[in-house]
Image (cartoon, rainbow, N blue to C red):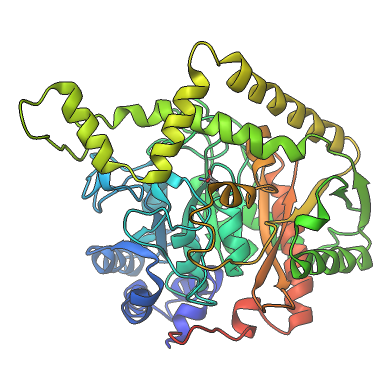
Length: 504
Ligand code: GLN
């Protein structure tokens, strides 16, 4: 295995800047890795034909003395929910098979402008609905730690690509946990920014009041470097905040060397049902808290009585918004068109197209959402869910009056087996219990590896949540804990742990 693929994005960027390595060499090393392992992992739906040309262009510009950004020449994997002009964008759905966008998502355009080299598009649950990638129309992704297990979802492709050293950086999207939960089960880092902090222009919408785009990486610093590239105001996204953000890479660097944990008040939610958590997940969480406490952090019990209703509220609000967002896939404007036999009508073509183009989970949520929004039930379902959402927001406000950050395990279990929950939507939904509240309230959240569960040796992540707009605090705290733990493990989790499943 080439040493280049094991470097963090920050270290690779330094070698690119010094001229020790070219972007073509780095890109080729990652393309070779994809060719070697992706038949087993299936992280990518599409591998770019243009990556080496783009890399060569960066090398040329650097040689000509052009001033390039801090990550220029570093390869990037892109979740297929983000539209791209030079690769198909399917959002994991048959209905968008081979769909080519006439424009780039803002985050993709910013990545290109920063000199990042798009390697390809990563697999995901169809329209980002799911926690395992098993709802992808193009087959599931496999967890590099154990090929029989899920890589999380919906962004399992991005997380698996990063964990399997197929890409140093990846973009994800998080509507109810799709960046953080895949990071948790693959031993990687994922951050969901504050709602409005990163543009969604060109992110195929799932639930517009919940969706955020963010980084998936192997280190907290790398996440900060990518966030610095993609973040900030975008006039094309009407929900985009106009804030001027600090450098998140600098925040991560400060966290790694500074004294961030001393006096930090970390809230632990009393109502989170310990019984629902796998033993090794709870143990890893408690151990991470203890090591923070040993550095001077103060652990405070916090009551957030409405968090436990987050899943119920989310699975009404999300389907309601999704049923509206997906109405545009009508056989006329985008992608697939299926013409049924006989004399087709507009309606019969639309019905046949949606029947053939959408998978079971998407249909389930469209039916649920349409029902919840229907006139007679609107107040009972959608209206009640919105009230619960407000109560959860108030829980956050009350919590952040007492503590700087909240901490939870990033998900209740380690990576479950492929096939284990696919026929039981409720079990799949319950996996999102700790990630969903952040989306409902619009606050940022990060998942950082906290260790391996003793009983199965699989990765576990700890989640930190901060008040809206305090994304930089998450980078400082995440990097501080990461530095502590990596030191205690004698190296990064991904390097240290036995990589099983045979292929790697
Ligand atoms: N697992 C959640 C769902 O199925 C999260 C999805 C997401 O964040 N895109 O809706």
